[in-house]
Length: 565
Image 1 (cartoon, rainbow, N blue to C red):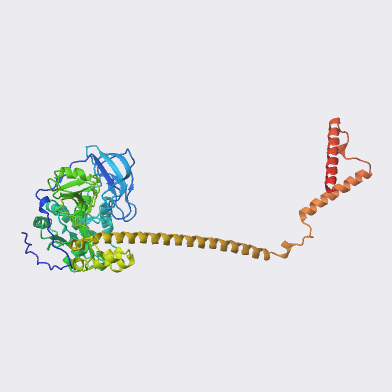
Image 2 (cartoon, rainbow, N blue to C red):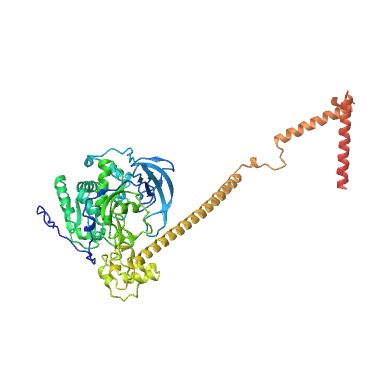
């Protein structure tokens, strides 16, 4: 059993409401140290492995990529880049099955590995991170594609850049790993304690926190010892390893903050609103890799466990490795399992196929036997026992939320703080009626999100229509104003510019004077018996043309007279 050091006073711990004491079942996968998983023949990489906008592919089918090369770039602020986990050739960019409760496909980049595992060019290491500008550190973390590895997959660079003017006092590093069977964080702290602490130190500098607390449940004595020893070696005075009681779900972000600091994050607010930021130990190690070695996030520790596998263990697996290949490297199926769960038994979900790839959020593959994940049977009527409310770590009323979710009264479920539910599964676990409460709450959340998206879409359409109508009205008003301005300008012209119609125009008068002179000249010549020069001495051909023109003129005159008659 681990006993905390006497060099520091014992920190006062607090308690969150509800929670459960569950059999941890962690010993199965901690008998051996983590090993590097074999290089798969094919890597399947979903472009969305994070909360936010999917990454935009930068490669095309047929391209050769190197390990660590950027293959999909982040789109917008809340997004994360994607890198090639190994060298090879891109063979497809298509919709493929992924690890998701819906079972729906998603856009993936498929790389056929070449076996060379050849690294591409990496950014230079930042060894002296204490002297580096925070802006450069933050950009390094963003470009490395790091997201929260505790399950939420929120882009880490966004989390480490709180709103301007918001003071962050405490950085909490989550090493609780409270869910049964999962041990990847435990083993990470045992074998990479210095990287976890270094990553925590980098994050502390970025957010300007005065203290960092690393919370670890007391059922992980080896991890606690390794972290304390590394803390002594690195001499990081502002970081403290805190042992907390084992109680599910102490690894929840809000629950861990409550245990360590006594601060309760208000409903609808983020931890940053109370001066706290929380990150996972795996995220801290990934930050150290990006800053100290220039390496992007291309692999992670995954726990392969359950009675359904032959040799439960932890594997350092490349992102995009198919699940069945990791199962094979953990001794293969033992024949006892009947369900393959991504995650733990409380918050995980059943996979529709074992050929789907692991992602940045994949921390565990649980091949559960019927005794480990028993079928609860058909749900019966709620007996209003209130056990669900007793164990809720967020102090919700699951019974009331269930009734309104079942009735699809989404507004009422939100009045009961639906979105404060962390989907820990405590309520479903203790329900004597075997009602799948968490599934109802997930349904209500998804329906609420869909309605909100529709509302925003309708609001956007309304705003666009109103903007168009305003633009047309503005154009019409501008046209009318120009017309009125023109009329006013015409009205202001001097009287001389608007002379009566009987006043001769100078040009027209000149033409009329010229015609008059020509007529007078012709008359004088006729009196003198002199014919025009152009009608005398004509050649026979010219005379013939004149005669023909005269004939045509007579015909036209006759035709015009007949039409008028």
